Image (tube, rainbow, N blue to C red; front, side, top):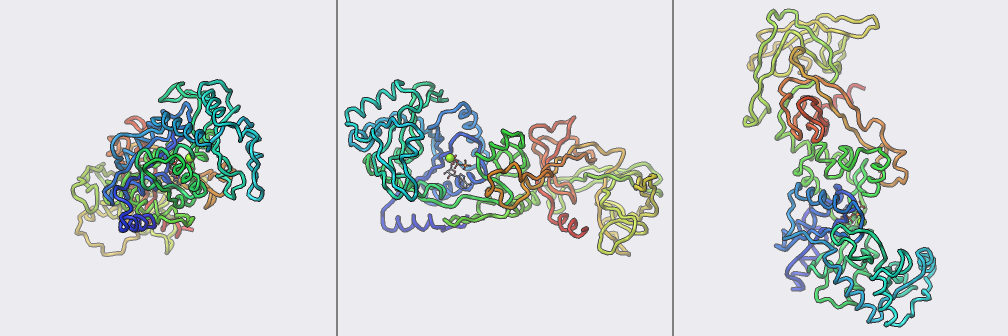
Length: 551
Ligand code: ATP
Ligand code: MG
């Protein structure tokens, strides 16, 4: 994250004016879904500010809205943040721990004549609220006496009202130009089980009422959120001023993360899961943390991506290529190389008179510590159909009849003839090899067309690969309401491939570079020794370039 963004500048100013000492930030996820990469931007920002100023960074599960799924999501959120390696300060906080306090402050506001119980229906409250152009109207319940309000609010708490029949509202100004200030709702009735409090409460505070108080209780100094809360800031300050808490956190807003071809909204992700368009929150096509992890993204690459993002109030869209380049550069340094043929065509080396031989390859071209492995070579090998052209073409760096290529890490071969079926499809390629061409110091006298990957037919093992592409057909899916209509039908292509035998021992979560194809991760859930399943994390850059040239 580019340092010294506007929030850092504000803090520097506050420090120089001795207005502030102990910086405290927080991340307050609502456990109504899993975290996505937009949340990581926020976590990373809050974490780093606290770290930079020797302050503290709190994790607060914002569980003010009970639902059955809360507990599951809470566990997943905590697990995801742990996986990212961004440590919060002390224990995990829960907004529900402050329910008593919230209630006391609500009573305090009633006593100050700054809140009242309204019995208008939800739709009437909406009608009375007015619009951006017209002022709102006072509710007929607005002028109840303080004692009456205290009593009815207590009745609300004691379950004497049905859901929707009463709510607590602030008494501010129904004609305020800021609609958020037109007597916002602070408490509503919900007869739902809360995963931490069970049925203890049947009234629950709204985000607006609870958030600023929770911030103040925790001693948060900088409450950083996304721009859509800008108009809630006057209310945030009004509440804190009205209840006279010793600590006064301040809210700062920055623009949310939008990435081209992706959605970073829990609501929209949920919509696609419910319609079975996505397999779940960890579908590798979406940028949830669990989806990215299952796809094969490392925590390191995600944080690197966040470090490159600007923090500002300007709405902007980050290119998805930036995320891809972060994972590529991370894996380039660590992923062992292996060979897998995704579209096999058989090649026969006619002048090889022994059946097979064992070659030893480095697992990484530059890093010795990544080790070596055995790769069997034989008279019958598979190469990729894309790496062969019957007739020579100047700008295609592939094998063709009469031409020579090097088989990756092994011999130089020349194609001599082919066998076709009656439809004209190539079945087999007949070649000769130069048995002396294996040595590293072998100097090619002639120019070779390419270096291509291969797998021995008799030793090759079957694998399944999930080839992922962009989930959406449009660059800015976040501007669409009907996102189901812009799903890329080719966002997942499942293919069979033939891999060198070393992959038989791969474990879920292990990452490899399939030479010339891309980086792949053994699927965390479904990969096992009987079913070898790999997810394509990202293509190699060079391969993309070659594909373009083919057109
Ligand atoms: P969504 O819009 O996906 O439902 P949310 O804002 O409702 O997300 P919360 O759990 O309430 O999700 O968010 C926790 C924090 O993460 C908030 O401070 C919010 O501002 C921040 N956040 C959410 N989405 C993004 C994003 N795309 N970019 C940056 N920060 C985000
Ligand atoms: Mg939210």
